[in-house]
Structure formats: C-alpha cells, structure tokens
Length: 375
Length: 160
Image (cartoon, rainbow over all chains, first blue to last red):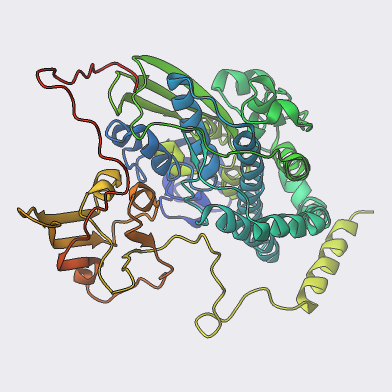
C-alpha cells in the first residue's frame, strides 16, 4: 500500500504513522492498548498490547481452596460474574463427583440469563457510545439497573456475586426478587424493541456497521472465536445447547446466527440473544422446582488427583475452566479460558483496511472485557 | 423510506425526555438495601453486650484475601482472651465466606456501605480489642475420644 500523498502540499511527510489507542481511552472498554499503524485515515495494521489489567488470577487460583475459586472468577469477567462462578463450580463438581440439586440447576440458569441480559445491556450502551450516540446509553442503563437490582436482591452484591458455589447456589430466590423479575419481564420486550428501533433502526448506524469488520466463517473458527462473535459468522455453536449444563437441556431457546459476520450481524445477534435470554428467564421462573439449593458437602473439598475442563456460555462466548487437582485442598493448576482473548485476535485481523474512525466501533462490536483477557 | 429510523429514534428520545427521572438524588435520597446486601464485616454481640466470638478462627481460615487477623491468648481456665481482631476493610471484597464459616453467629456482613475515609489507617479496623471471647457452649455431645495408641490416618489423596 503506497502512502497517500496530499495533493497541492509540498514538503509534507505522508508516511505511515503509528500511534496508540488506549490504554485508558474510554472506547477500549477497560485497559486495552491498540498500537495502530495508519496510512492517512486507513488502518494498515493493528496490534493489541495486553497486560494492563493483569492480576494473576490463574496463579492466585492455585492458592485458593476450591470453594474460594468463585471469588476470583467474579473478577475475571466482571460483567458476567455468575458465568465465571458457574464454570469454576462445574469444574469442581466434575472433579469431586458432586450431585447438584435440581433447583440449584434452575437457579443457575435463571441468574445466568439475567446476568447475560445485564452484560449485553452494558455492551449495548457502550457500543452505541463508540458510534457516537449518547442518549441510548441511559436507556440501556435503566434496564441494566433493574437487572442489577434483581441480582443484588438474590445474591447480595451487584457485580461480584459469589453466589454459585461447588454443590449448588448459596441462597434461594426471595419473594421480593421474584416479583422484581416478573416486573422486569413485563416491560423488557417493549424496552428491547425500543432499543432496537433506536440504535439498530438508525440508518446512519446501519450504514456504518454493514460490511465493516467482516470475519468469515472459516477464519472465525480458526481464530477460536466463540459466542455471539462466532454465531454472527454463521456457525450455530452454543455451549448451552451443544454441551448442556445447569438446566439448559430442559429449556427452550433459539440460537440466533448471522450471515455475513460483519459488525451489524454481531449487533443483531446480541440483541436477539437478549430476547432469547428473557424467554429462558420466563421459563425458569415458571418451572422452578422445589427443593434444596445446595448439596451436602464436607467443609474441605479434596477432589482426587485428576483434571477436568468445564465450560459455560458466557455473554462473550465459551468461558472455560481447566482444573488440575493433586488431592490437596487447592488446585495444582487453574486455567481460565477467556473468550475475549480470542475476540482480540479477531480484532487484530479485522482492523487493517478499515478507517480509523471505525476502530472504536469495531472494538465495541466484538464485546471484549480486558479483565478476563488478562485475568 | 430512508430516514424513517432516525425519526423513530427521535420519537423515542422525546418520549424518554418527558418521563420521570430514574435516578435518585444521592446522598439526599438513599435507596433501600435488599435484605441480603453484603457490606463491611461487623462483630455481633449478645444481649448483654458481650461479643459472641469464641476466637475459633474459622473466619480467618475462610477468608481468601487474609483480611481478618485474630490474636488471642489461651488461658488455663475459661474462654480465650481476644487481644485484637482486626479487619482490613480496604482489601475486603465482601464475599461473605467468613460469615458463612462462623458457627457461632459472631460476625455479620453489615449494611454499612459508605466506607470512604480520609486516612488510610482507617481502612484497618478493630472488630474487637482486648475482650474475653465467648465460651464455646457444649450443646453437642462431646466427640468420642480416639482409642489410645492408634494414630489418626489421613491420606493425602483420600476424599473426605
């Protein structure tokens, strides 16, 4: 690619320029630095520089007892704490062979989907901000606030729940929480239509999103993308359906997929996912079985030597936990598969060739959480 | 028609402009916390105002970030003496594992959420200081003693 020479201007350097977007730029959704090489307005190459949010969660996990692991997982992907907790709890349950009561399964699905909508609402708000829209951010926060209220009423915290544990969940739904969920469900579909009309229906935004940041089916698979980013490329892979956990085998839900894999598809897939998540919440609240929410467990968990991998469908994709146990109270190795890390790899691939103004938009369209990328 | 979506969006903006505000004017108005809200750890006291803590240290062991420190002295007779039971509120993540571990209902996750302070020393708090711990009530039958001469076996890999 030859540098674009400015016409009528002599002695002007028209070489490529490398500069950093981030690490504290609001459009980077946390602390992500992108070293972007530009030629005029066009991006030639992009490199994600990681490490600004590294807290050593994997190493810390080796010094945590098994029932303390959810406290770490909450802080990996902080927008969807329930999913992180669930992945670690599933791994421990598999290692130790714990039978989880059916009600706990349903509560995990219920709270997981509420958390999914809350996370997608945060994405929806920030994604529009990246495109230059402001007011919808407050409408999205209105809905997210209602969801965080529900989560706070059930779990006791708004973001770092520590609710799902090996063996079940710590507490049952309360009457207040249930009425809050019902109240939320009554208005949510109308609100979602409003969101979709406001942002997705806007022709200017459609023009900016269509055909931008295309990841085709094959490269999405080879990059290891999961979640909405993969489904937007037309691959109907969803952990909830393909490797069911919690109560998902008994629930009905659709898996939205895209056709072209551009930013618009990723947007539409996430919006439809929220609708499906609300459908699951409705089924969970109607079909919630009676019974205990926690299996009877000894105070100290000492799984036998062995290893296991458990994964869940987090709002960002396949969130997995690989545990290696050595028979002691703490894991020997604790690995956390973060779906956002793969989305960043895709981002490096989709940025070259696009305009600099679209960089922030594309970072928003893959929905990354640097907290889980760098863990 | 091109532009219809933009007009529809504007209608939504106007509709939202007319509705009641959804925020509250903190700190003049405060929202009510739900019953399960977990904030700073606090010690609990019995009806006579004595601490319920027996200095068993279950909370200290349960804490993932080691924010609780309990120094106690064992005495020949009677309950232990708590020299100092400190709590590092700045490092606490309010997971509630300590309260779950406590078998004596001696600590609770309080509902104090305004935890900002002007001096970092205030982030280390004394939950209890220089008091006698509560006596462990023998409500359960005492554990049977192990027969003499047999060592307790505990293989490292065995499941409990």
